[in-house]
Length: 125
Image 1 (cartoon, rainbow, N blue to C red):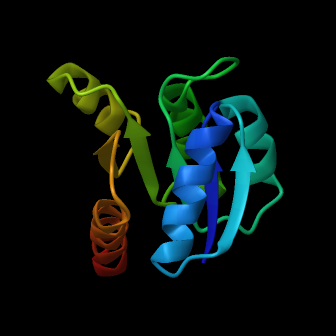
Image 2 (image 1 turned 135 degrees about the vertical axis):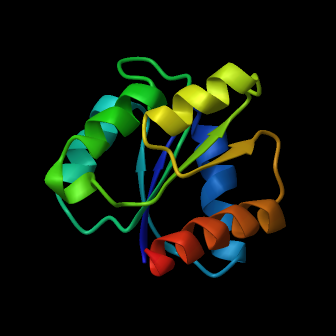
């Protein structure tokens, strides 16, 4: 399974990549904003997206909307990892097509739990 990790913070990308590695996922592509992530997604082969919300160029919310508007992105799992915890923000993310939501800071077990939850719903669909 190939992950696309999108965050403008190189440190946060490294934390997510290391967390993924600790839970058994080591095929990862990185992008530093939504615009560059769309280009990497268009190259193909991405199975799961983990994206931040607040980024320059294109926010994670706009990135999710763009992915969902594509035929090859209509069903790809999207997990948003962000500091935004307001109920309205979570609802906006769901409306944009995000499958689940993780608040920063997080631990590898929490990330695994959210990924597993998204994958189990996708498998049932």
